[in-house]
Image (tube, rainbow, N blue to C red):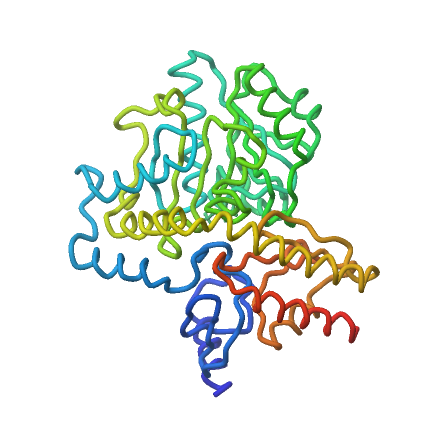
Length: 399
Ligand SMILES: *Cc1c(COP(=O)(O)O)cnc(C)c1O
């Protein structure tokens, strides 16, 4: 039956554009923290579709909400008032300090909306010709032309010039660099408080509070990308809540509908006034189907205190991995992260270790060549993490 996989791979390579370096695995079914391949072999999922299925695969309440809504109303367009979208907006706003939400279909699109809102708010509300967005090196903000320009990694931009104007990247973690990059054209600063693709790098506490203060002082917008770090992943509903700051706007996407495509831009009432009817739109944003799924995700996360669970289970995982680091100080260079967003940095390129773990039935991601990135479902049983830690120990011990 390895043949079924080889045949699928050949058809994929012949028919789907070659934009992904795919893992040598095809998943046919998933439940909770488990994936099953074409042969029915079981894997522990430490990736959750890249921080998407935070409530685990096929969560029964979310699946039921999708089933129910699919029989009622799937799509009608944003020309109409939609009960499900309002319900979702209210629940989302109850998790934070923001006053308004805009719904779209992906993370990149949410960040595009944030960039557009920043520019329009500056011009239309503040009456200032300010449009430039400052971002940090190592960041990841998406793959559209504007968001890849905002991204602080050159490999993402290769071959796509000319890139849109109005973006500048400064070194990560250097507040003076932001201070000197601010000019009259600056509209705002966009950061991930904990970089995901960049290798799981949490920003220091005083940097984030210092940046928030700097933005206020200079009259520019403080914007946060919570696309990967949000939705309880780090042990609070939003990662910025660890830092005691309140951004003027922030974006989310990945885990918002536990696997259905959805993004959102949230802003304070003041900043949201930068948009008026007609200034921004998308056909599919906030359809009843996806909104019903996302509203259920929010309900379950709040009711079951999934943020607290991510913190507790994250602390447990942290203990396992820091113990491993003590056992293999020359092989593990560091353990970083918050809650269940964890990077284990190896002291050497990690492809072989990653591959061996996959063969042993553990699905995770390798980023920046040496960082094993764990983004498991927040509902993952502790035993799965313990089994992974002993497998990693065995793999490192055999090197
Ligand atoms: C995944 C991600 C994006 C892009 O989201 P898409 O849905 O792939 O467009 C943007 N920012 C961060 C931090 C991400 O992790």
